[in-house]
Figure 1: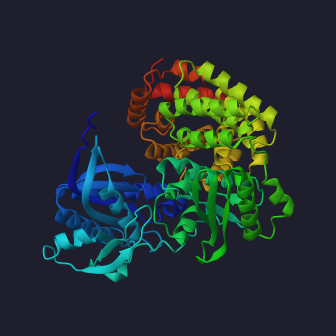
Figure 2 (figure 1 turned 180 degrees about the horizontal axis):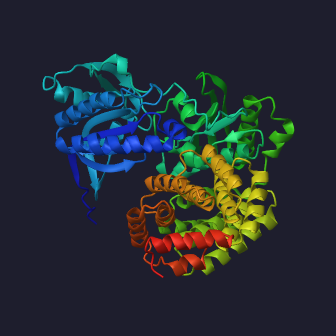
Figure 3 (figure 1 turned 45 degrees about the vertical axis):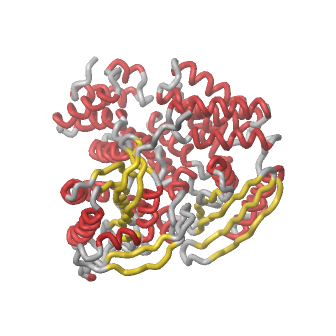
Length: 594
């Protein structure tokens, strides 16, 4: 059979990323979001259009752009970087927004509106090599524009970058910017009075590199990392960043000091996994993010059947290194019940990335893989718990034919997980989500707190707890739970849901302006999130901003055509009748239909 032809073309790939985004957001989210949006609207997007570029996709604080002309791509980057210095000159040095830009010329693969391929990957790696406010280009770019532009290049030599086998010859662009207006240095911490640094030991576990030479084994190396995170998270004296945030650095050439500052941790664990047949090699190194120095490093060789013992050994050694206040009893606490079969655990690991896809296709794949895991090992509690969470997610997103069916499946699986292993936090958290979906916030609080007893660093549990506490009118506690969720996973893709909890808390306390501000943050993270729009609409009504309230309701109904006063009243987000009445009245004023 003749293979389908892949569409390709030669193009300039332009990758840009904001420096210190997480730290700036932590210091003042509203200000950072406002300034970033203004820079894009007034400078970056128009400049890209002026030079014939096409924004392919936005990636949180970064973007990928395609240019037909390599000269235009470099000129555009230089003008953006020069203008950014002027635009941020009046800001304090530790508050300035700046960008890194990487540019490569190469063969790209066309995939609908997206572009893929080695040409794009190299641009992304070059961006990581650029200085704050700087531009880094490949050798072919430097050669292509030499003599056509009036600025020089500095040869950075051959660079070995992550997931690119060959060395990349890199050049930085000499922009000649006034040094008095130096962009933000990511090594300078932001002293936010709202979020003082934690006194207890803190750690982020990066996704371990897959060294097996087989991309299909990626799930396995990710799973090793996640399992170590789970073990570390059971320690009460340790702040552990969730995988949803630490994995955002996957595939990047990272500066450990930068990771430490952006995630607010003292230690970073990184490593690699090589699997071949029944043999496995795992390397790990613990790094002090403040100094960049190695605290501990080791290599483990063994058989696949030894993997659980190997992971426990890594966890215990990390715990022994990060703080003397962590006792032997706490280290022992990190050891947990394991599945009776490595094959069952392997299916569980394969299911994890599909669960985090958060879409219907991933939901269906999770059901298949976890059903296989439970068939192999009927006593594997975490498989039941993850499948329960998967069904709760389906109920939330309406992926099953009936939400009632999805919730009942989730409850049955969660209770089965708890019966198999009372100390597995996943089961309790899954049951807490079920209680929330069934509008039983008191029971949800009990279940979620039970899960947090066994995993004190579980951001999702804190995020759900925040919502449950709001429904009960315990708004001050809800905001504390939100802060714990946020500090445990500052880059979490579910943060838009947690902000809904903040909105509800502020609305319940009649802090309508803060409610709207939290809604803006949620919408920035998830532009099609109808929940943020309709709660904002009610708050805007009470602020006297009627036109904005009506516009917010229209957008909410666009994303959820079934939304009405009746549907909101049928599934109120509060227990207190006064809160429900105020929400409905605000939505009525905003024009929501009966």
